Image (cartoon, rainbow, N blue to C red):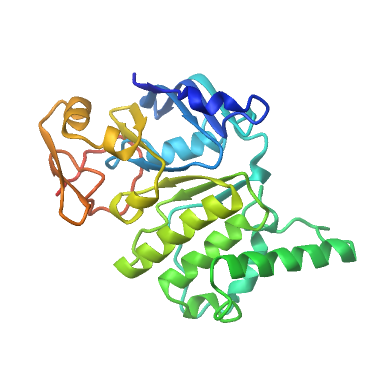
Amino acid sequence: MVSWADPAFGGDALAGPTVALSGVTVERGGVPVLRSVDLTVGRGEFVAVLGPNGAGKSTLIQAILGGLATVAGTVAVLGRPAGEDNSRIGYLPQRRTFDAGLRVRGVDIVRLGLDGDRWGFPLPGRGSTRSRRRADLRRVDDVIDLVGARSYAERPIGQLSGGEQQRLLIAQALVRRPGLLLLDEPLDSLDLPNQAGVAALVAQVCRDEGVTVLLVAHDVNPILSYLDRVVYLAHGEAVAGTPTEVITSEILTRLYDTPVEVLRTSDGRLVVVGEPEAPAHHVDRHDHDHGHGHGHGG
């Protein structure tokens, strides 16, 4: 077990960390996916969750949401047990696909996020007062402007590009003013310019809105310059710290018990050479977290 509990996060005893895992073990089908994981994420941090397929990235997200029970240990989110206050969590699952013929407007997709603890399912009676309806409409407008989607928010979601859709889905996750934003592979299937744009947007939200961001990624490079910390998962263990502390030849070689070399290119990008699949050069877009074999890294 490798733990991460930075004492710097204890400065505000009343606020406390956004996410705190202590000795957490989670199993799928009786097989441990996370083993005795200790992890603390401070408020307002932008943290990437990295690792090969099957390492437990999506399992970690589901444990934070309270969707998976722990075999051992505790998970606290925003000062409460996991699953007890999901209305304060903005959650963007792995990439959705919208049929090209879908006529629902982008602004309507954003409005669905008003019921943040029941993602995508409007609550009966919400907005029953005129003042609440006005406040909700203002907030929808605000987050559409925040993500830069004003010019296409009225268009059908199925007619928008992947990057435009992703911005609106991030707006949906933000509309309830969450304290924590969980993004499961938000850059997946986007081209490089859109990856850069969405990465910059998430960093801006983290900074300007004071939201803690936990982002699952296969490729760390598009977000590398924005990150405060990374959490690298492998073989059920978690190593966390700054990217330069964690994504090293020594750390990854020890985690995988096989030679791994981390190279930094002249433009600052990371390239990981060796087995198994590594976070700076991934090709398989899905992480099912069921303990399957790893793909190949660059």
